[in-house]
Amino acid sequence: MKVICGKSQLERETIGETSVTVGTFDGVHRGHVALIERLVKAARDTNSLATLLTFDPHPQLILGRKGCTEVLNTKDEKLHLLSKLNLDLVVILEFNQQLASLDAGNFIQRILIEHLNMKHFVIGYDHSFGKDRQGNFEMARSLSERYGYSVEMVGPVYDDGRPIKSSSIRRELKTGDYDEAAAMLGYKYFLTGDVIKGYGAGRRLGYPTLNLNIPPGKLIPKDGVYAAWAEIDDVKYAGMAYIGGRLTFGDQTICVEANLFNFSGDALGKSVKLSLEKYTRPPIKFESPEYLVAALAKDEMEIKRILNI
Image (cartoon, rainbow, N blue to C red):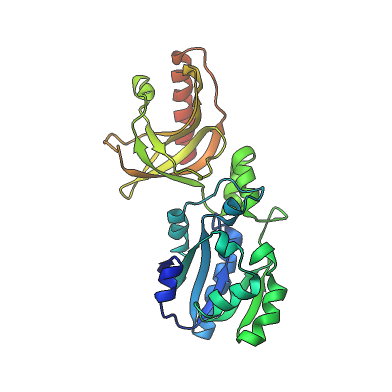
């Protein structure tokens, strides 16, 4: 999978005929995967390049629209997920006011036709593009003859009777049912961050933790204890993760930390991928550190049962 970042690099490339889909693809959830699978099939059928055009940062963050203040994936996380889906080309354009002001017709002509040499357009049932979101399937179809491309629409994927949407996943992760969010994603939600120096409270209690620095703008799910898997230097470790304030110690600052059961090395400064397997309980302010230690021992037993270790 080739990745082109930015308009200047795109303008320097000579690209063969493409089948294209466009969107933010935040979360790369099951609905996105179904659309991408259809794109890849269309590309193979037409001997064209399966091409996904996406944006960074998320358009809603630039446009200031209500609904998205945090994203499910950082750019690198999104590329990691997309790399597994048999795409030939991913183009990432910076979303700025200049791009936001480009109307749908000019977006198709100047970017999809002139730069991406599009011959087939695969569009999601609810996707809109261009200034004021004026572009949609009907509009794209109305221009297809003029610019010499075909177009098809891909419908929704449902989970428990409702269409899967990134906004629904964000809502479930923040305030709802973690298992439902994971079911819509099609994978366990994960956080990626570098290990930073913590306060050492966990180590003093006999439960040393890795403290993660999560990039700004990345959605951190609701506070509590999770069964988790951590990946460090391509090795997976089982453990229990905690998101929230250190309530027993009077600290309300939100942290993301993990106690790994079979890890004893020095991970300071290393990148860790923390996959949240299951939500197990909410945060609790204990009367003393001793009560906290007793609760952590119960958490460990329960989480080892969940992870089957």
